Length: 372
Image (cartoon, rainbow, N blue to C red; front, side, top):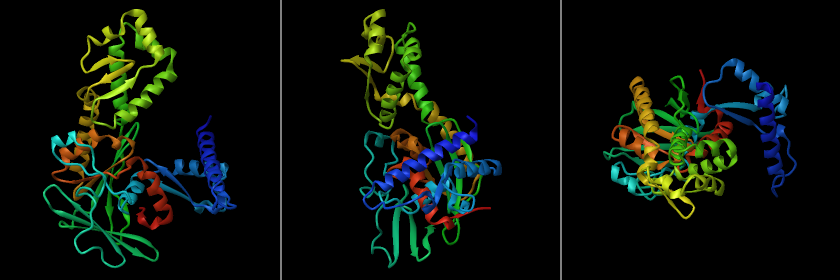
């Protein structure tokens, strides 16, 4: 398929599925694609050629017509995520202590700690205020003023120059770093070129697969990967859930893998030569320390890249973590430990949804983003 065909069919499927879902809702009523503003999120600034290609795909897919292209909005993922975080998210932010010992504690829901509380005296009329407390007890207040034409965001800190946000979009494959500034009136402006590195969740997945290859030696894992790719994928899905934790985990071992391993020798003997893993009743038990080791390379490289971006951009006051990989307690804690003494590190309660929900905000209030 050509790139145009691929974009077209993906957009057509999403459009049809969305319309079908809405029509089945009791309040859905009779609707068509032309009733909507469609927002397409992109990981970095669009080149004119790519924008024309995606616009043509949207027309062919039936999202918009030749005369309604103004109903197609392109949203930078980092701007969308930041727009959602500045709203603020109804669920608040994940609170997490800054000490190493806090890795032993699960993250508290927003509102239970110091991340998202109303200041004394309550909000002023027509205004919602969120108080964010930093490690050194400096207070950062974010004001969200409601006006008839939409939502305006005003940022106030004890240091009025630090109105810039570094959005770290931690995806499945890439980690993107983008700096935005909150302008007078609340609009967001991207300041630097988006920088992305292949350090996302799959980087950790690859370490886990290397470990499985080490456990199931003598070619057992290699043969299993080649002959049973769907079962391997199921194991990776299961691992993807567990890698968000910071504790001992248990991964189910498929019968096919166990049977092939036992053809060579007793399955427990495969675990005798490795540290951090054991076999028990059909499951692979992985220790917390071993699970952490899968993150080491990724976290060190993310930290270096993050430090480079911070050194190149002044007046940054906040680091905002979003994306599916930001679900990981270890990732959040590591970045907080490294940078929390100097910057406020924020992560919405559901970081994987920040781009999606923020895209809706930008569709409703496109004036929240200023383009060059």
